[in-house]
Length: 347
Image 1: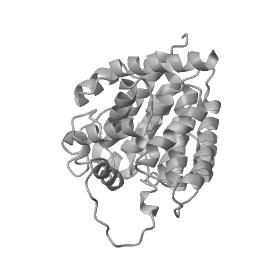
Image 2: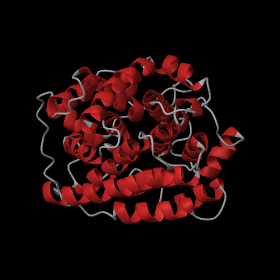
Image 3: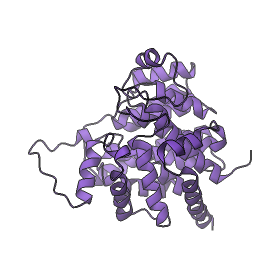
Image 4: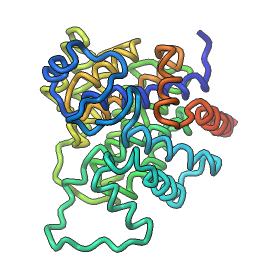
């Protein structure tokens, strides 16, 4: 099939939404508990159980992960692709007004930041000021659109990802993780992209995000995102079936909220399923723990690399209907801006 930037960007958006929607039904369970509850490996949208965060959602309905990415992309696209503090703040405040996505799902770090954006005074807890609890995947979960606006331009992708991340997660591991995801998406959108170049872009983003983060952001106690990412890629490209690699990623890397778990795990799942974006998000949905966030990031990268036509046909209409978020028009908006960005760079 001939290269189409629109198809790749649409694929990234569908993948991010599908990974979130599929993972919303399995979040917080173990792989064994997922199999026990559903009676099978989850390979499509399911109704979330009553004992998970997604309780009450219909099949395919997103949580905070894709929904915040959609509002971020929409705000930036509405300003011609410019990424700046007001646009990001506006996007997050607008997102927070949609209770179906925000009230049940938004993390504490993002909630506090949005309160400050709205001029609220956040009381000082009087406790220890170490920020290790903020080294989470909360920015990386919504960062994929930044890569979509800058296909192949890793430097601008990193710069804009730092702008976005610093507003809510101003610590170097969070910057490292966010830049890994956005750079993987950016590279995946190029005509010459292959799995290896995407994995290398993720590693470059993690390295640069950490390096720059150590200069401008908070220092926190954290495992290395870069080292965990390298190990995850090694597992993903190593021997074994995708299912075996999924288990190994969960055991060796982790699939939790911490940035040094979720981001390497998502990249590792893409590596473990070459040519199979659906297999990648199926792995994310069944690995257990923070399945919706890992699914969102995994789906964005895989969709950007393999395109919209690689997803099952029912995904897009199901996701748009379940969430009330127009994905197709947003893909067209982003594509127009991204094409101008590519043309300026080449010119």
